[in-house]
Image (tube, rainbow, N blue to C red):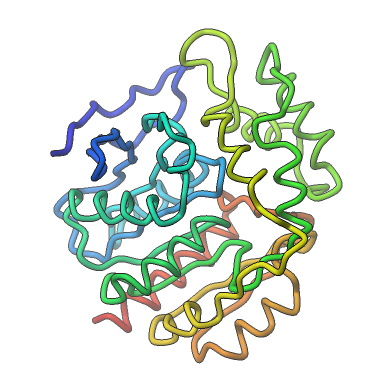
Length: 309
């Protein structure tokens, strides 16, 4: 059963609008949240946006608005909050923050949303989930955008992420949060200005309950602490190769420490219809809200739609 929350009003407290918040039950009863942009009756292929490990649906707001409000071809765009992130319930058992559980959650959302086929935009963990869905429900996927993720994960990036997830200082304001993020990641993202850092802060911490706190369950750090980064990480070329029949856009941050340039090149070599883009001045993971990024994603969406038709 899907519960709806009215579209958010445009206000200083909630500047983001243009979507409906919907809630659906996971297989174990936990409440999952997703943003639903665009007309429900749209005939265009929908787009499903899957965020990074400790990120939320908010990361896709600009691209979701652009795709859903396109004058020529408006379409539905769903952006998910995984369990333990954003407005989804936190799990009492942190071990359920597992990609197999999250895959089942994703399938529940797609079924509840009436999505039979879609184009998937996956940032980091969202890309891994897309590959997993490709193995479980291959007919659902008609196009893919991988944002700074591929079949080979660089352990350096995971080590860096493990160093800050659930461990960031608690800012007293979003401006202070922006300073914290800038100090932490300025070398990876020298291209970002003050406005982008503050936007990132507003999508990292939340003030829904008064004082600022991370917009995710801090026990996510336990998932990362369990990883043995000395051992070789799984290589997922088999899952990647299963997506050869659909158009693909693979994005890499020029300063990424999670997706190697060599892996991006091999993705393009192995896939018959894979366009690649390296985002200058950005690391893991590139922001998708710029006009250039939106244009590239829209181009992939149009390509996938032509192929599907």
